Image (cartoon, rainbow, N blue to C red; front, top):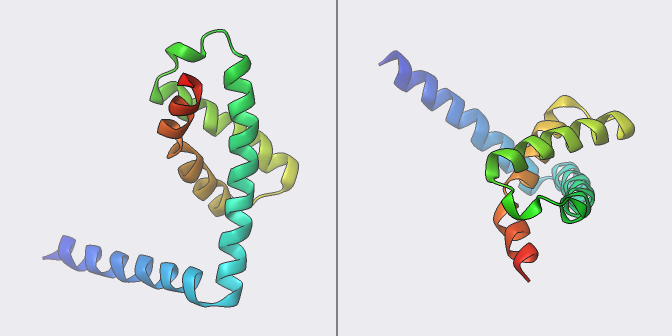
Length: 105
């Protein structure tokens, strides 16, 4: 039962955070800034991948590694907080299928 209570508590905290990001003006602004950062990182990463000779052989693990490197560099240049950096990594990593689709065109 201990694991259940921990999961319930963690789920409640996560839900509260998501509600805050979606309902308050400050939360919406924060989410918008985070998505702007993710978009900038994605565009830069896309250009880097397309210039690479081995982009056709890029698998998801290699892509996620490139994402982490790009976000770390971007975070240093733009002074991102650690939690924002983690969210940007998640958002950009989730774009792997979109990148593969754009590369096939």
